[in-house]
Image 1: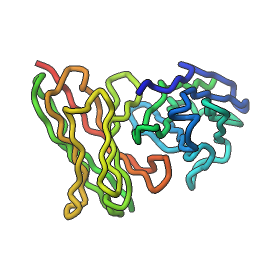
Image 2 (image 1 turned 180 degrees about the horizontal axis):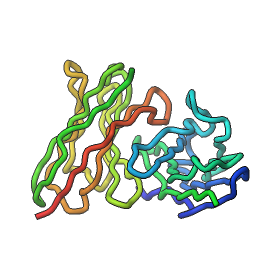
Image 3 (image 1 turned 90 degrees about the horizontal axis):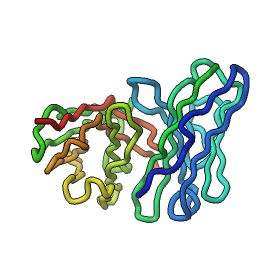
Image 4 (image 1 turned 90 degrees about the vertical axis):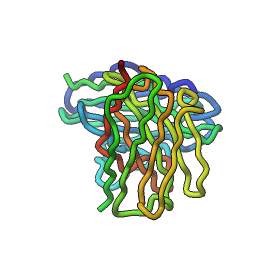
Length: 110
Length: 117
């Protein structure tokens, strides 16, 4: 049950697009279309941004999009805004019927 | 309106036990799969345990054999019984709901568990 691998930090200027990667194995990310992404601001509970690889919950901005290729999933934030500055985590279902989170990525808006 | 309210956190000595509760409203806990997720101070999210709608339970290797997840359908409440607690179990514990997809769409506010002598 090793954590999924994410870059520690990603930054971009307002209006730019950034992409966060999430690398696992064929036993988790690569084996199922059950990847989700969460946004967490300091001191707050996580918020679901993407589920089942590429689906957005109601109320989440369409600036957030998800995709997957092989064992790597990605979250793209387009039109970066100041309020997007937060920590982001991916998560995947696994072949053991459990779940695993990513190591987390701090997004900084320059 | 869906709400999840955790309780039961606090300070406990190493080797001690604690039971966390997560009172749900606006939905039925037995109709969804429910999980506990924790976050150590200044660290990332760590998945802890899940109970599926059918009652099957699974755990992270780090807590297997020490923690037990359960639910009381009559009280619409999720529980996490934590035994043989260690310093590394110190964290904010969140309960979370998944509504048929892979994503946890509702989270509680979290309850802090501190394991220290």
